[in-house]
Image (cartoon, rainbow, N blue to C red; front, side):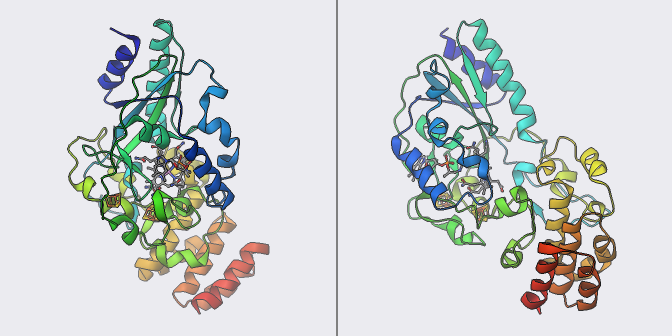
Length: 364
Ligand code: B12
Ligand code: SF4
Ligand code: SF4
């Protein structure tokens, strides 16, 4: 068996769908990415702006790179039942209902790198952490296409798929490009609550809830609050409506954990960051951290359940984090509890104090 076949089988045995991709990406993808950066669409994710040339041409770092294997792990599990007890409101994006995918994909990539070495070749695996455009390689593999929502999807599995890439020192057979099967559909763009989806599969992260609820470390702009609706962590609005996700024919990789799909919002306040990290060890929630998730929970409650918000406000207004206190004060303003706002803003300074004052005007 050829080396690439051995690797492909090894990846398939571990449950991945495998798509060989050529080493060179069309120039237009790098320039598209540079235009995206130049327009500021990467929001606060400055790490993306580092060395775009290397990102789109891994041969600059790995001169031995001849062919890639794109590994896709489908994750479209059915929603688990909501556990009883606690305050369980708001939606978590489907990808985060299971153990953080980086944690179980990275060891598989390491195993494949080991197999590669034994076969006398060289390999380097990527899953997000590192300058590599996973989706661009997935598109180049010809296994699927870039949807209008910017996500890579296939006819068999839809778009609910984690992506990883294994760079190898063996050349692959270039596959024919996959036709774009979005046709005249526009459901994802029409269903995006913030208008983040622009023409040509381009997503402006400055408007995407995936950015504001997961990646953003500061206070959520007041202009985003109402569009956040009930999204607690991430957003799937541009995927739930996709017809290819309804027709998918593959089984998901892992069983979802109800405690991750429906976290108890009350348990986010009045606990230390360390206790939170222990409770959610191995989950994607560690990316936003307790402060980010508590901030998001206050916005969801402000949008969906003012009575429960009133109940947890005393705890949230006394939170050790000034970001949580400022968000709690703005949440109080959003439901007309102006006295609570005035009392709290006295204990805040600088941008956080300004935020709370602005919230009085915004929601007043
Ligand atoms: C930064 C980032 C984000 C940002 C920016 C999103 C974005 N659309 O770029 C934010 C935080 C908003 C985000 C949100 C989400 N993300 Co994200 N994200 C990333 C990350 C780390 C980098 C992406 C990036 O560089 N974006 C900048 C764009 C401009 O570059 P690009 O992705 O390379 O796109 C280029 C190519 O697609 C190329 N291209 C290729 N073919 C074609 C064809 C045509 C016609 C055109 C025009 C262009 C083109 O041109 C584009 C521009 O150069 C990747 C992992 C990675 N390392 O790639 C995950 C990744 C893209 N995210 C992923 C996921 C799951 C999500 C969310 C669904 C999470 C959630 N539920 O909240 C949302 C979806 C939002 C959306 N509709 O895109 C998955 C997507 C899997 C898939 N099936 O496509 C990835 C691949 C992570 C992974 N390893 O699985 N994400
Ligand atoms: S993840 Fe949500 S906010 Fe982001 S592009 Fe999709 S629908 Fe819009
Ligand atoms: S919802 Fe429609 S336009 Fe959007 S990715 Fe799916 S098929 Fe394409």
